[in-house]
Image 1: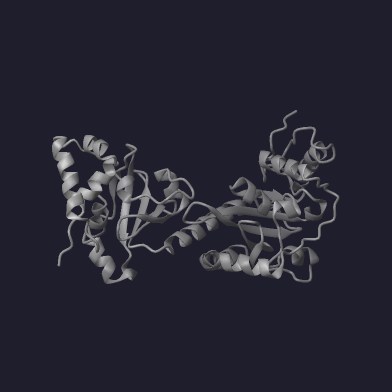
Image 2 (image 1 turned 135 degrees about the vertical axis):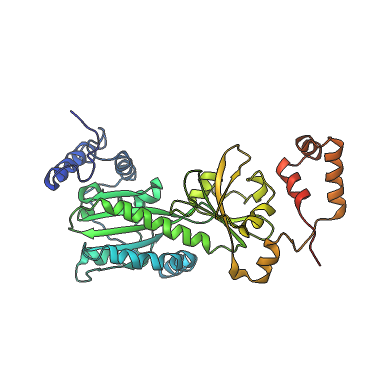
Length: 376
């Protein structure tokens, strides 16, 4: 028998529900002894985590809220996320106007921090989950789009019985994780309906909306220069472009996930300097922002090349203009520059050898030598 997961939309609604029920019997009614047919592997993993916690599908759920102080802390800690998400969720409401789905925003622990959309407050199944402060983590309410998204860190779609508890079998939901400018998960976006038609296209909608929120979070980082990145052959102006925020001294201050993947930046790691990533002096990036060409291909130290479109952050005022023109506010000490130049001269122009002698990276040598003194 074919036990591969049945993709949403590939079977009539009644057949789909029957296949889900078959999977539930195989795993949940028999203590998880058998593999789950007809569901995605991540659903099987979530079900088994719930069983390992001692949960049983027939248990009644209370949908408990965290304490008032904990709710306040969650909201305050999520202010940047709430601000970035607000316009995106408004657009979501238009896209889902005729579907009876609504949006839920949670923090990284699964605590609801915002609800938006057509919530029927007369329906207790809606009021139970559409409340700021309610804990919808996997540890609290079992397998849902919220818990699975935060556990698996990728977009998901769940329909009816794919939820763990019988009490959550009325919901259909799509979810996507939200990552901050440092690459760490800061929450998730959920689209939920109750006793509604299955709409797996919402998985694409929620993933695209999550990307828009992440981009807004990145752009909110302090920066003097914004780099839009893409691979050669693709435009940096596309929605899939990487975003890198750069300060006046050439240090990265934030990225979206696309840029972090392109530059191989680890979540939570210290931000690098531009010249430790790009195999060009960082002033080149500022100079290019004044150029006539919308983007150019630049080499990375990895040997790869990226199409880069640099833009000055004009909101930063005169300081931005001065820094972008290659005039750093704090010049390096003359003695430091002289020592580096001497090392390069002693190595007969071999920058790699000079860097080895000095105990610094080759990119750092280039950066130190290429900085210009301020024009007074």
